[in-house]
Length: 348
Image (cartoon, rainbow, N blue to C red):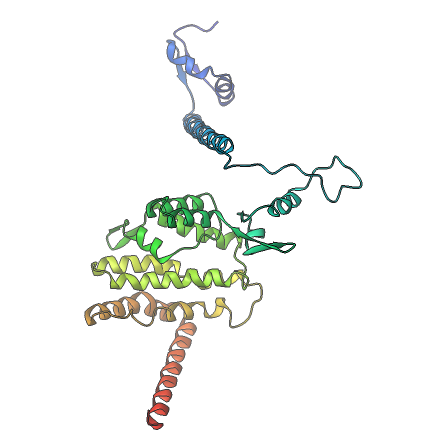
């Protein structure tokens, strides 16, 4: 029998066993002194935190269950009936339908489908017999709620952030969303301190690059819109009534995401004029012309930022791309000059 005033050392195994049977907390009601290794103590704290997370998850699951029950009782939620497999009709009447079979059979009696499986929702609709069923995603549902004023813009962007945090792929990034989160970010010593939502945008894009969910040219439109919105959002910062330091800090952060070359490995077909070779040229080209409508002072500030952040680093780190960029600019200028001469010569 252990003495009531003893000092006891618990090894990792005894700690695990006592925790498994729920007896670890009983020590606090005794005069026993307990010693554990520091690493075990840290692990125990993490497990306690995890236990708290599990309880929160249980509460969320119960909330979802209650919502479903209310939906079923009101008639807004209905379950499709279990059907006999078409393939197994002749062989085995007890064979149940496969998931993909059930999906198509259920679609035949539906007006639309909300599907987050990329294999399915890469198509805008599915045609069954003579019926065309549109396919939507969770993102479409969130946008619909916002368009119908069921949720606010803050809630809409918060939902998008949660989807990114959960690993949802191909979440588009709008200019409005970027500006919404940039406005809430702080600037410290000339560096943007992004909000959690902006960090999730950056991490989600990195995840897409790592797992190669993006396939080119299949997803070229999605990637083009992403990079175009990043470039437009960057230029837009110079039209706002904010300080030059804030403009530069936001532009620096956005420029880091405007990474054409970083997507080059997603190309199914490689060539010498692919993104790996000309990515930096396209990146710089997207920003060469200052935003329209700027006063001369702000335009000069933008050009200074462009030189310091884009052109000079490109010249120092990738001379070949810099030379090609200069040559492309010369070609464009000459082409414009030739068009002006032709128009002038025709008397227009």
